[in-house]
Length: 553
Image 1 (cartoon, helix red, strand yellow):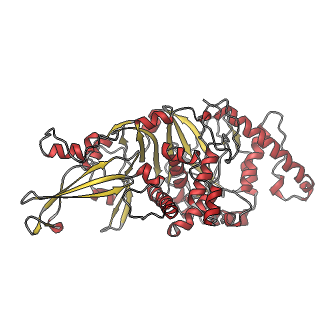
Image 2 (tube, rainbow, N blue to C red):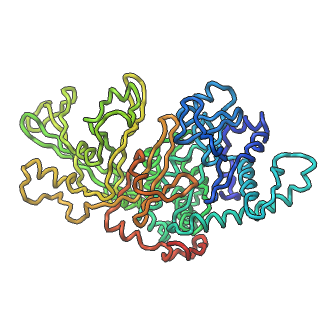
Image 3 (cartoon, rainbow, N blue to C red):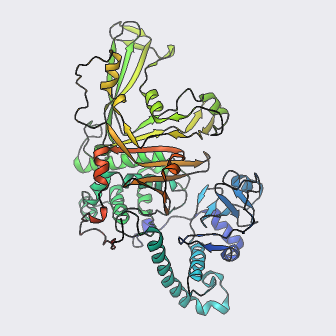
């Protein structure tokens, strides 16, 4: 975060955490410090007993994320942590056992506290070979130790750098350039997950790394202090600088709040809604620079050049067979679940669970449902130009033009207007890593409608590839009200999990077993080009200096 700009330094902390610190001071932090353990990969976690497995006090479960309450040391799983808070007044703050991160049960997300961070760092320093314990003198406030505070801080900072250096060499030295964690700024996992996917989309990554948007020139030209594109450019520079320490996108968050004031809060937001909002912000900024119209169907902004496609809608009169065709631009495709697996009425009554005996949903099945002809209801009669009156009709969607980057949004959240209820669909989706979109193109759909006759159409997609490779997937875990987003990135055919500040290598099975929410595919040719070693890419001299990445593969 840039300390020189006061616009980015007024973000208020979690009020529940602030209330806890007013009531209890640092007593809870000091007690937890002795329970922390530094793992071989440099992370901190709560030290578990050798013979006793921590279990949720409500369901006795031990899998998934477990949290320990800072007030009563009660352990709860992610499904019951809110229930514990509601039953015990003042028990809003807990600690993630596996990650040693503070969690606000009412905000339903991780919260950051620099005082607690000092506790963790102090423990990590003490666990280093030859490390000495300074206790938690910086925050304890004991008069007998205040004389040692200044020297203690300096020593901790030196050893913290040593710790980070050891952690980078041990755990992240072989990661591709561009893999860097993003700190959770308070219910911002939705933002971090989308940013990871966007910054690794080859067209956007190449756009910003080749200095197509110059921050210095932009601010001189426009005089604006807040620019969404400038802040994305800054994040891109930081992500590909070679620095492996987690980055805090606070400036970007503030700029996005100014662009989308209706979403400016510390509450958890929908990742798909955020994705649309960011692309809209990029488009608006570049439209001002180019003096182009927002309704221009051939927009040349980087958001539309990368993600924009064209949908074809055919409405056919059931009586006479007359077909009316319209075209609509799109930057993503939202897919419903296959109807044969569950009904929407069941979703409104209870959450869909994976252990129920249901058919396996596939991405191809969802795409087939999207492009399947649908008969409109009797209350949706449309005017037929041939019959000159309202008629029953059918509607069929197809893809007229494919984008470079294909974003598929899986509708996991169902809303019932009648019951005024919302539920999450906890069902797994089978999706391929290589995707052929030919069956869903307008050329294929219309040929099939006319008996697969081999004749040319004006909407053939001969100039673009229909073969895609997946490069990113955003998954949602947990409940609708208290879920968590993570991103899985596929770089050089190896998968990496981006969980806020943490980056880890995972196998294909882990990715397929996740509850995908957004799938990002890129045209196959671009995917293989993007797998070239980024450590050899020339970065503009204007940009932030790069750390040596000789050890990166």
